[in-house]
Image (tube, rainbow, N blue to C red; front, side, top):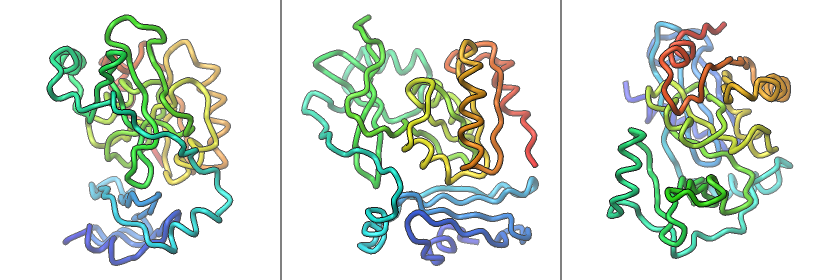
Length: 253
């Protein structure tokens, strides 16, 4: 069955979620589809069903109007990508760094400050970015704009909240999890709004941030059906096998 066409035919308005029977496994009320600012995300939560996916669609004029009047905290969009942030395909040092971390993500390059740049999108537009120094420049991590949005990567159906972009890329590799980098250890209102579209969220900050983990879990409970905290032994970007195993073996209702 063409699930993508099925979901598109639902004509879900921006900010809305439909929960219904799965069109593939026929599970009762196990299938959800959400339109999150033009990103259509769908999945079935039945254990025996592997249907999930995501695709960007065009927002209608009515969707855009609804977003402007919904009362939600929207990203601050006052940033335009500067000319010194360019494609990183031809930069040898950046490509070596990407290979070193074994990353499979869209990464740009800051030619002025020699940084790997992780773009942040909203409605298909690059509204912000995070740069990671490749030359021991301080600060190591730099946010270019002030959108308040997290860095997001992957197509998984369970959001994993982490601190930095590298960790987000690592957890998104298996296509089960979506990496959501807070770029720190606290939630912005924009991050809460973004995470509210998910039924399941894992909070997996660095090992020294356990009190912050518990605080974030508490903050997300009014927004998300199931929130789990994971106690790590190392930062996820280092691919500790025990930590990745813990993530992979999480049990859900």
